[in-house]
Amino acid sequence: MCYVITVICEIAQLYNQTHHQKGGGALIFIDYHSRMPIYEQIKEQIMMLVTTGVYQPDEQLPSIRALSGELNINVNTIKRAFSELEREGITYSVPGKGVFISPNALGNTALTEAALENIAAAVRSGRAKGVGKERLLQLIDAIYEEGPNDD
Image (cartoon, rainbow, N blue to C red; front, side, top):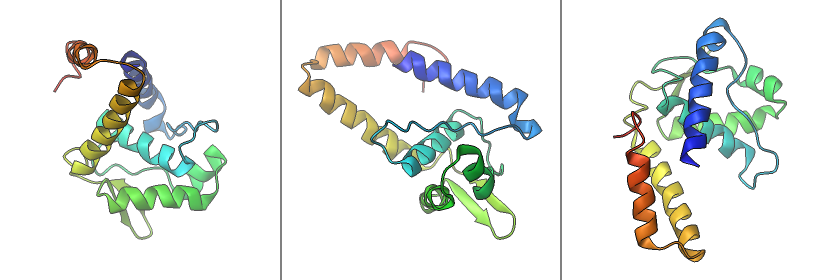
């Protein structure tokens, strides 16, 4: 699973280098079969794009209308995702200009807390399915030994 996320991040960065700076398409993909609400998917993916360096501090996000049209999603859904990102300090808005990544977005505790919540849910699910503590610790060690994404 971690390998898949790493590959997705690398693809997003390559895409960013070739399209994003030239006004290319959005880097957000919606899973219509997911139980996660669409606004939450958008929010999570923008947070991932910030942590992987695709979006830099003070960089402008696509406009709400542009993203709505590109993803074929209701404007209010995009607004909700952007509002939550702003409430959590990941973004800030400039009236008449748009939504931008906060200068301190990477140091934001909301990102860390969201990651820890996701990890806790995955650990609980694994425990319920019979994954032991030792196996989980081995997996954690393996993930942190994978390479340059270590802390």
